[in-house]
Image (tube, rainbow, N blue to C red; front, side, top):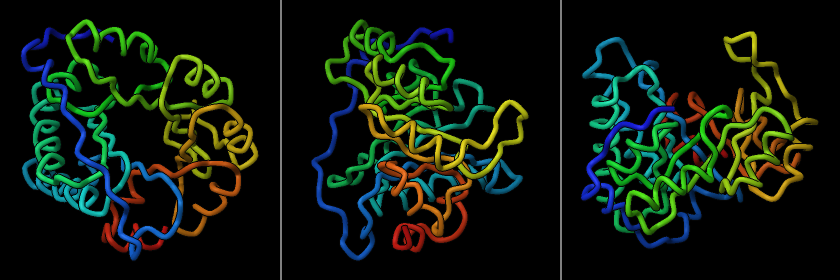
Length: 239
């Protein structure tokens, strides 16, 4: 991944985290971590409309204290991604009590530029070690939150050794469009959860099968449709 030049004065502002608070008991009854992965292309054809809808979803995720929001808009040019990410960060910072952390998918430079809370790395991206070095070199004193996509237990072990904060493992129940991805299943999820970092299950996770992921050892669940389809409050309440 090539890093683009960033404004060091801007990156030095790496955002302070808002104070934590206990989740609303009426909404969060299950002890699991939640990660909303964004995909505005599922929210309509018109770009301005789906951008607005995405920001509304992000606002709802913050309101109902989803733990992580992963901005994953891979089709956007860097300036468009940075603009969207800034708006998302602004939404988070408007809530003085939210525990939600905003992660930018893969782009360390964008994450630092907009003062996001951290980065989510693909399995073939640079190492979490290199991410932390880049952040320190840019003058960011607060260490970033780092998640890593993993498809095998070995991937999780590697992420843990490199200092990742959590892993997203999958696809557990559902095969992706690419033939390179095969369904991992509950047994492989269980094996992947034997390492030292929290593992979130991804891929076909629903309200009905989320409990199976927890039973297998996952600390939480991640998804796109899980959070983008339907009402956010109802989704949180059912998990």
